[in-house]
Amino acid sequence: MKPIIIADRVGKEFSRCPVRGNWRSLVTRSETRSVPETLWALRDVSFEVFPGEMLGIVGANGAGKSTVLRLLGGVGRPTTGSMRTDGRIGALLELGGGFQGDLSGRENAVLGAVVAGLLKREAIDRLPEIIRFADLEGFIDSPVRTYSTGMAMRLAFSVAVHTDPDIMLVDEFLSVGDIAFQAKCTDRISALREGGCAIVFVSHGMDQVRELCDRALWLRRGIVMACDTAKAVAASYEQEMHAETLRRTPGFSPRLTSRGNELRLGENRFGSLEMEVTRAILRPAGTLAAGTPLEVEIQYHADHAMISPVFVVSISRPDGTVCLDVNTEVARVALDAVKGGGGIRLVIDRIDLVPGDYFVDVGVFASDWSHAYDYHWHVYRLTVTGGNRNKGILAPPCHWLLANPSS
Image 1 (cartoon, rainbow, N blue to C red):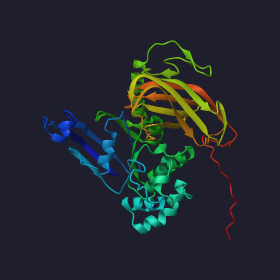
Image 2 (cartoon, one colour):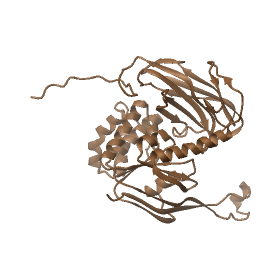
Image 3 (cartoon, rainbow, N blue to C red):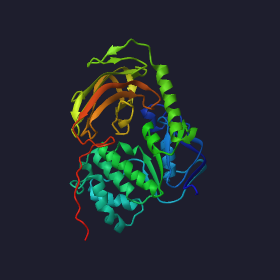
Image 4 (tube, one colour):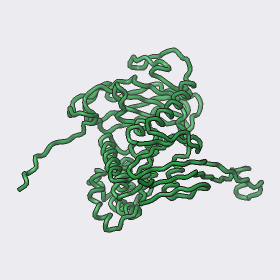
């Protein structure tokens, strides 16, 4: 079998002109001219992807992950080396980023499908399936500017996966929608792979990389650190990030949370504490019924201005199985500079988990994901009651219908 993607010693250089002088010089151009500076986003990057294979790309912000996706998608060309692809490319570089706000969801879906390579007639024929998959039957004729971020992202994902791509470029697609919709996204991605679609997937979630990807590429400042099985690369990357977090974790005495849980640094609490999670509040506290909302409030404090911190919330089982992993970066929640005390809330519209015991883990990370400022692991318990006692993790609302016997 021949590879469908071949990156051969790819390098990508960008130029920028630093601003010099004051604002007046920008208008009058009376100051010394700026000298262009160069930045290598990628250096000597090589990899192959075969039909039906899924390659994860991991690394801190600024490592070059998005640059790889853009080059694969034809946005720019390598400065050195070559990037070759064979087939129709479906790119999810920014979910919903290409939608026109004044057009309806229906019009945007058709437009997006045509841009992706379908004929207009084909796009219209697939529209009912696109709408049904996105769960937007009641809103499809409303302007997209009236959509929530989640609605726009669901529509963008649905359009992308219904255009028969040979290659799929995906940036954090599993943040789309609620838990049930994320499971539907995973199933659709699996179906595409079975049909021979090659997928390149950028993610900060190592559990997703381990679960979904065959192999993974780890980039650090544009240089390949490892390219191996997904499990091996995820373990190496996590080990480095965890080591950096532990190196920065100070030796403070344990303290109690508002619910009486003990936080012990290096055991269930990790981070440099440059910025602290001072309190985590679950509403409802402790126990909720399956299919009902959950709100997680994170209160924080930072003595100094922290630039673009990333807040995270995970729901996991006692054995460590991750059921949900979301963060403010993927959700595109802009946090420029944070100083002093404050709070941020995550509202999960419904928890469709099977009954049982879970933990809600909360934390805040540096903007480049190099280490945690503060992370509370398996501290806040959550018990889910009621719901469907099915096997697995999800318990979405569902029912059986008896089909009429065929004549």
